[in-house]
Image (cartoon, rainbow, N blue to C red; front, side):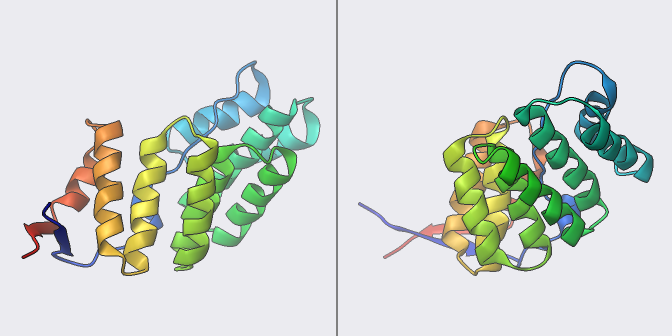
Amino acid sequence: MKRLIVYAAVAAALMVGTGARASVTVIGGGLAEACAKAALAGRSEFRFEASCTEAIDQEQLNARDRAGTYVNRGILRLRRQDFVAATKDFNQAVKVKPDLGEAYVNRGAASIGQHRYADGLTDLNKGIQLGVEEPAKAYYNRALAYEGLDDIKSAYFDYQKAVELSPDWSAPKQELARFHVEPKN
């Protein structure tokens, strides 16, 4: 059996701006749904964050929708690279619904943005274990964490997994293009 050596051609730019976030769908109308739609649409404006805050403060939400609204507000903050505020939202989501994988995946992304790769890896592993609606994003973010920890081989395999799970998504394919794989003698 041949073993593989994996090399990254160039160190990845670990920018949260290119990282993947896993939003939570909230249905039923109102501010929480508007917050979810903003997160899904890639928005980051403060007016959408205000909708999320109003939903959290004023709407009667079940545990999943309340936690999801914290996640979605955190995503809006994460897009603006407000890592501290985003992390607080993800922490609140975990308190409300500890089995919501998206809260961990996004908290992991915030840690990556702060170059705290080991913390990010722990949260990403937990999110993957719990399950998420878009697992390709979790594997992509975990690959970024592995690269930050100089574990190039694990990063390569997670980028591959992201492509396998979401073959039309270009971001992990672009990352894989930087790698050179050759058999180990």
